[in-house]
Length: 70
Image (cartoon, rainbow, N blue to C red):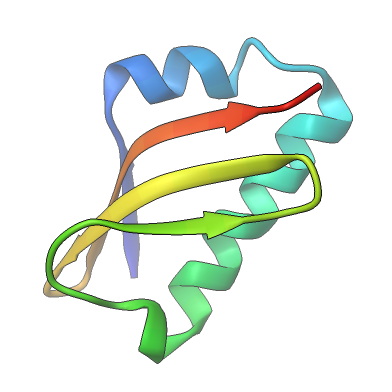
C-alpha cells in the first residue's frame, strides 16, 4: 500500500513529540497491513492517545487528519 498524507495532517504529524509521532505511524502501518481497514468512504483508527482519519482508493491510503490528546 502507498500512503499519502494531506498537507494539514502532515503538518500535525511532524509537529508532535516523538512518542506521539511513533504512535501515529504505528496506526498508519496497522491500517496498511489490515485488509478489513481498507474501506470506501471515511474511516478512523484510534490508538492510546492518537487517532487518524483516512480513506482508501485502490492501493492508496489517504490520511486526511491526525491528532493527539496529549
